[in-house]
Length: 242
Image (spheres, rainbow, N blue to C red):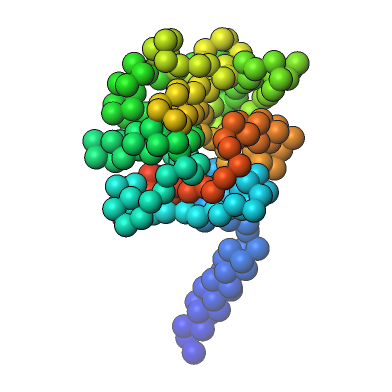
C-alpha cells in the first residue's frame, strides 16, 4: 500500500492522456496520393466516384498494373485513360504500349508534375516551377474562348505552379495557361487519338472538388469523349514503395 500514493497520480495522468487522445482530432494528412481510395485532401476519391456522371452509361474501371500487362491479357483500344500522379515516368515498354493505344484511337489524360523522357522526348517537353503569385496558390485559365472564364481560376493551399517551359510547337496545342502566360495544359494528336497533359495534378483532387473552382476540373475532362474509362492506380506515389 505504500506505493499507492505514487500509483494513483500516475493512473490519473494516464487516464487524462487517453481522454485527450480520444477527443483530439487527427492531424490532416496533406500528402499527395492521388489514389481513388483516399479521402484525404490530395486523394482522388471524389473524382473517381464522379466519373460515372462525367461519362454516363460507360464502364469505369481502375487498374494497379502497368499497361503492357493489361494489353497482354485483353484489348483496351478506344477508351479514355486517366492518369493522375506526381511523376509519370513509364518504362520504355509501357510507353510504347501507351503510344500504340493512342495511335489506335484511345485518348490519354495525364496530370503530373513531371513527365518521363519516353513521352517528353517525343514532343521536346520540359517542365519548370514558378514562384510568381506565391508559394501556395496559382491562377489558371483556358485558351479556348468557349471555356475561358473572365476571372482566372484560383487554387490555393498546394503545389500548383508547375508549367511547361518548352515544347514542340509544331505538335502541341496549348489548352490552358497560368496567370503569367506559361502553358500548363496541352494536347498532342498521336495517330487516331489525343494525348492530354496537365502539369498540375493537385488541382484534380478532393480538396478542390469541394470548392467552387471544381468547374475547372470538369472542363478539363470535357475534352475526353464519352466512352469507357480506365483509371490508373499503378503510377501513384503510394505504390512506389510497395
